Image (cartoon, rainbow, N blue to C red; front, side):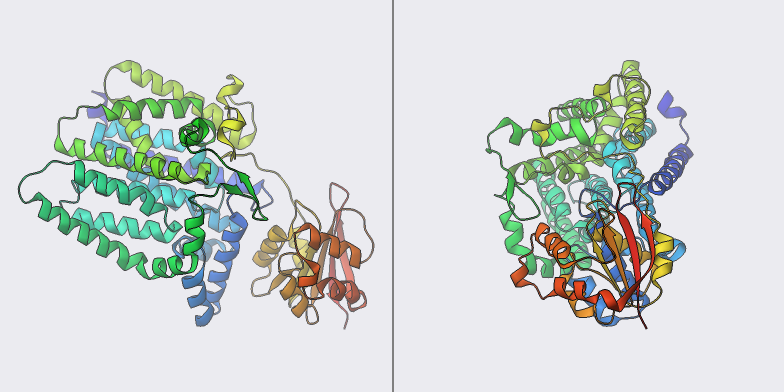
Length: 543
């Protein structure tokens, strides 16, 4: 009765409310977080997006083509925020708010997938559960591709189900287009989730005479549609990075120096169950993750009446299991890898809650309450609703899910006088040198690039070759020290910082000597104290 009472407009109203709340949450969180300090190369993504945008603004065709075709990450993820950057300016805030677009796609696709299984009530449950998943709201506040891939995997899963094992031409094209867009968001993840799933669906679906021909035609249409979008970039990417990709299948976690830090025996429990355990730990939490695993188990043995229901359930289940199985076979483990399966997983969960007796809805309501508590604890560091600490998460022993990557963390509140600092530097090239491990050059340079559009910012530690070449003509210099220091960084400090970043001084140009010798060429114009006793100093070239 509840499902029949829901209006068709209820879906869109719920989607609008979810997006509005997400927008407010993202804006509030990022206003309290001083760094683009995500756990999966966020600073690199922000820099790449600024590079591509800058080439477009400058109408620099050569660099535009270079950034579009040779980057380690595909260009679609960096093109997506452009409407937000046009409206709000080219900065981190616009990039993060662009995640609201990915969230809209994710909630729509997962909700429609659930609706095919359990009606409008299932869609509402699915959108609510996804919105309360740490992997969703935690990635909303970071400019990283996890949410984008989850969105387009969910779209592809929806059309895979509607295509009835790729036996319907138009739906097969839509499936291929979704795969193509997803591949332009994050390289090979779409293929890992969708290619095995599509094959599984095709070979396990019974049919009538002539279905094989229709499915082969559907496969062809999907491939053409997908490769038309991502083929050229994907071909170049594989040519440039084939050896690196193959090496990860047998190599565990590595640190920034290339040393292996994590390795598991293949048949160990920690290896075989890493991703289900990560779901219960950082991805979703004990309550929501446990409910999702119950729903997945029930779905494996479900008896569906209508062929459309059977096709939808088969597609969603295949996407989940394909990704988990493939990534389990790969030695390198990260909790991020199976986030794209969450849309399909919550679609099955929402459908399970909407079916059967009323106790399931009561269980779902209890999990929603725990989800709200968990969100307050994880994203805001608040006490939440006074529930046991184990429900705040992450809760499992770290050895079970190492390397642990909590998907949601409170804002750090770190602020520098960035506007005043940028204003003091004036125009021209800027060289930075930061000894501070928190306000490292990777973060400082991005913040200055946002505030100094069109001006190059190079770091002594992040780009020693570039800093050496441009120091003689740079108009400004920024030094972030970890103590009161002196008037200018000495040779010993610079060399020690370079060695700490794993550089071999003998292999570098004399950047340390050049910077230490430039003391008389640049004049201190302003400085600010840091809370931990360090200082930020701004220098301008003496004329």
